[in-house]
Image 1 (tube, rainbow, N blue to C red):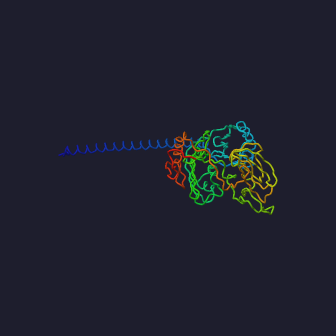
Image 2: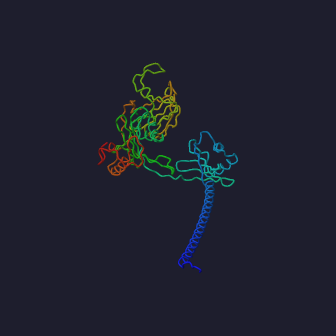
Image 3: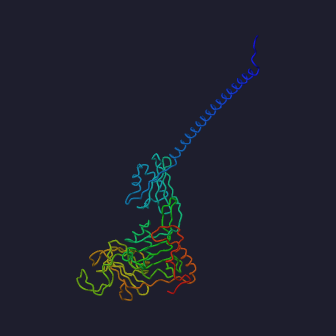
Length: 449
């Protein structure tokens, strides 16, 4: 008799096969999805890679065409502009075209040795631009334009900031200023401000300090383009502080005053040389003359300085004699106010003429050894109403102080400037800290002269 399998067992087997089929379908579908996802991702990667390659090509082209590397130098002395272009690898024919282009906007005869000169080239070494700094504000630009060149004069973008500078003297004022990271020009400016009170050849001592608040014009690169006005200055000489604040005199001209309103300007400068040389012979009524071999009065001061050292007039006046005069050699005699006359002797060159008006600090001649002289030096003499005076011990009277009507404006300018003084030994821009030692003792008004 035929035996039948239970219904439930057959149904279960069929259901199991259905489940297996379903699982297989799911696995196939999942595999297909994964394969499609992998393909899509690989296609996206390929597209991204292609995009990156294209971007790299564009960037490389941009770098080759737009990026310029500049090599900076200064114009050498006694070298023509054509020779300068030749030194940077420009052919004579191209140099001629560049010069012709530049001449249309700037007279190349005015190119000065020491001014900044730079050459811009692409990463492939192709010439892109030639730059010459005419002054702190203007630049000559020469650029290839097809087979020719195009030139123009551009304004150099810059900004001005009030900066505090401080330093200490170890040797000279020049060294102190350069050690503080500044240019020698700033030392010259300081010497001019304090020239009525200090001789920066003989007076500085190791350990002296200086502080100054100066306007600095800076290029967009941060490089110093030039110095502007010095708003305030301080020099501490052997423990004694000399301070100056920029204001204006009654005529409206820039002038320096002490913090309590007294004029820094004296009737005469402290020395006939900007950086006075050592005194080799003092004022004397009986000095042994090295050439005449006899004792005779020496009614002046001898400054030992190299030939060619500039000589300046110590005060405003009129030249009443300029020329050779016996043992004095080349002589300049200047008449000043109040009966004063000054003499500048043994000059190698005279730069003024008789009858000419001169201003205090103006260069009038060069040190030499003309006349009776054993070596280059300046014999300087000062006379008042016919009597020669010892300039080393002559009091130098100041000019007028700040007027009462100007005191409020002066006090505002003074307080702003001294508040920017930095701590000695630092170089600080926009320093808001005031130095208490620089504050005037009489902030409420001017003192009597």
